[in-house]
Length: 236
Image (cartoon, rainbow, N blue to C red; front, side):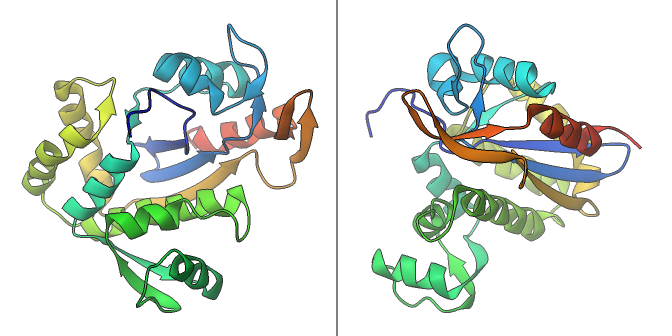
């Protein structure tokens, strides 16, 4: 509360392919070591605090050769509010996740499916100590996937109604007209889309190391990750 813009806690590229009908979520791990235009090399999550959407987009373009069409930022309060507005989310938990969340004071959890409100879904999405940042990014995609599956059969009118309630909870560089246009274009995909997922840097293409005064940076094979992205995002 009260903080100015800080390092982005999670970055997910949502690619909606109108040709294949697929939706792909690509998590860019926050400790990825990259070149940030106008600044020194640093972890990827520094780009947002340096220059917001514009700097982050430029960083993704220069390092990975991808173009971002639009951005949506959700802070912790907005995340909680959106989950609660949508009636919560159902997530399957492992024993380790249950144990971790119980230690935070969340009772009544079990291994397997659990219904989560906004507070619990946020804590789940931020778990990292029991495994890794890559697993953490996977949990974030799990929450988004669960919400898509929950609402994929809603009518267009219902979607537009939800939009009016969600807009105050997000920050975006899109105008309201642009958002409505995206909904019109992408709504036909929602009920039948295949949901794909990837992390960057991909497993086996990076090492965790210290670079100067930057600790625990993920130094990657940039060419390999650019090729993975190209194959993911190109049309057949």
